[in-house]
Image (cartoon, rainbow, N blue to C red):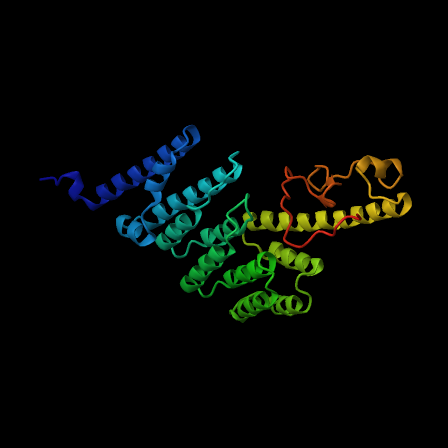
Length: 304
């Protein structure tokens, strides 16, 4: 006599897999078509990682993928939103759930940390949560030297704590199999932390050692931001020269062009014009630029 399908392990596994696949597909279609209400969204994500793990019925990896997709959707949707107030509060919990379900989810640790550190309004601006997420990854996989290095980058780039950054680079260098340049990176950070050249070296090393395209894209963006800062230095030097010749600061790019100091409207590496704010005495990339906001270093003031 044949047993009913629900008493057959293989049949149950197939059925649950189909249900999970249907859930993911339906959720993605729903998200593309309809905006979920705030209350609905909160109900979807209230369980803790441990609670979801108990509910996953041995489908931890599949559920981790679902929560990682949700984290990407939440981050990307909020970032692209035209709302004047962007709320990234669910990003941390979603990443925590994904990495609790799959403690070896490397992409979720590394890219989740990037999402968390991104300055508002492009992200929540929470380097503290990013460090905690990566430390969770280290607890699960102490052999992954990249996590130690990523924490060093957070302290260097976002928190400007160069001593702590150097100590994390040293810890990364101590991990068997780590890249040879980490030790010199720690020394350079202590000697010249905060200089643009040391920042450029850090991001170039990040690009060269990246194990996936997402990290390379982020490193390329940061290197391009540093190029924009170099451009702004040169443009400020031209504004100073105009001030010395005319006895007053320039009121716009047109005056620099008329004086022969510029050949045309100065564009950032993405092709958008730099912004000269005469009233506030600042020069920057456009808020519409992919490079905005520039990193935390202070931009030199224009002549007043």
